Image 1 (cartoon, rainbow, N blue to C red):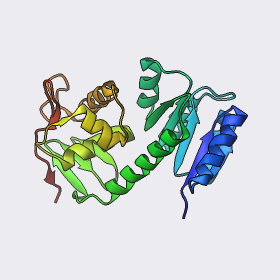
Image 2: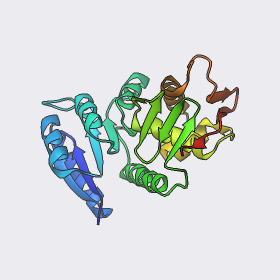
Image 3: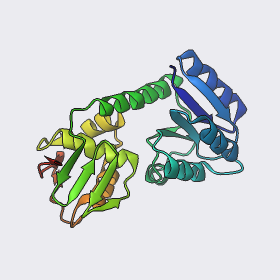
Length: 234
C-alpha cells in the first residue's frame, strides 16, 4: 500500500505542486492550508509522514509539530523560508526529523522523504535485542523507550534513532558526516551542528553526569563513540 503523506502548507500553488509531485512519485497525499486543518487531518488520516510549513495561519507549524510529537512518533519534515541556525534548532528540538529551507528542489525533498522511510525499515529489521542495558539505563528498542533507574526518560524520536545507531556500532568511532548520512539519511554538507545538538540531548537523557560522559564519548577531531557495552535484558 502506498505511503500516505500529509502536506500542511498555506501557499496554494506550492501546496498543489507538492501534492502533484508526491503523487507522481507513488505516494498518497492529503493536504491542508492552515495549522488547525492540518492537525485535524493528522488525527483523522494518520499519515505515514508530515510535511509541515513553519509559518502557518490559525496555528503555527511550531505548535502543530509540538502537538503531533506529543501524540505520535510519525516522521515530520519542516518546510520554511527561514534558514537561520536558531530556526533549525527550534524545529529539531520539537522533534522534527528533517528541515528543508525554501526554495528547495522537488528531487531533494523526495530523496529526503525516501531516506526517512528507508531508515524506518532498516530500524525495524535490525538484529539488536528487544531491550538492552547500558549500566543503569535500559533501552527498550521494541517499545522505543528509555528507562533510567527504572523511570522512563523523555527522548525525541531522532535522538532515539541516534542512540539505536550507536548501539549497533559499539566501540566504533563515527564522525559527524557519517552520523548525518546514517541517522538523518541524507548528505548535509556543513550541518554537523545538528549532530552535536542531538548528542547533547542524548547525553542529558542517559549519562549519569552529562558534563563528563562515560557512555557516549567524544573523540576529539574525529567524532563520537559508544564506549560502554550494552547487554541484553534477560
